[in-house]
Image: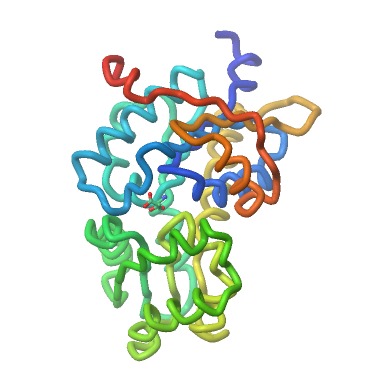
Length: 277
Ligand code: DGL
């Protein structure tokens, strides 16, 4: 492939479902001329309640599917897939792979205060990856991690400013308040949508870290370094692939991306099992 054509290849973004659109939103803001292929595994979501072996297998199939679309980089927007499979994806991918944990950890440590709270799915918190990376980079940091599984369906329902969501948040976050968290890592794709409520419950003195912004910067820097940014004049396009219920995606993309994405293709990820890298 000649160099100019290589630059115009899309960036692949993968999530268990629609939550990764919060990451895509930030990537498009930072890299407006890039084309994106967004893959949401809507048939098998949620990943957050599944085991490591299953999530690793699903993540490899997603990687094969995106590489089949000739992407120039892969962003694993899903925290659960990053927590359980990033090592495998990095080892097997022919193009650079970005996960959401490393940028989130670095953004949290860049803030002042040594008490970092981590909230995520049951699988992400169970993997302990956020806490391990935080402690590896700063042995003095104190970490409290807890799963908040109800936040995912509440965000998908669009109840982002609702009294029910607020009381669920109070229940989940009480322990972090008592503990004296100074920073909270929103370690799940859906939680940035609940930033308003989480921020109110935690109070203005507590910093909320959403890794999407730092991640978008890291992707932009690497593409610039490799001279692989697109030189096209128009705004980049988004191609959407899901594994089931495309109509639901179109509705939810308005909540997550403030953009209605009606042109949704259904793909069969199991078909990529035989071509796993
Ligand atoms: N995308 C997942 C994550 O960020 C949340 C939804 C799920 O459980 O699959 O962990």
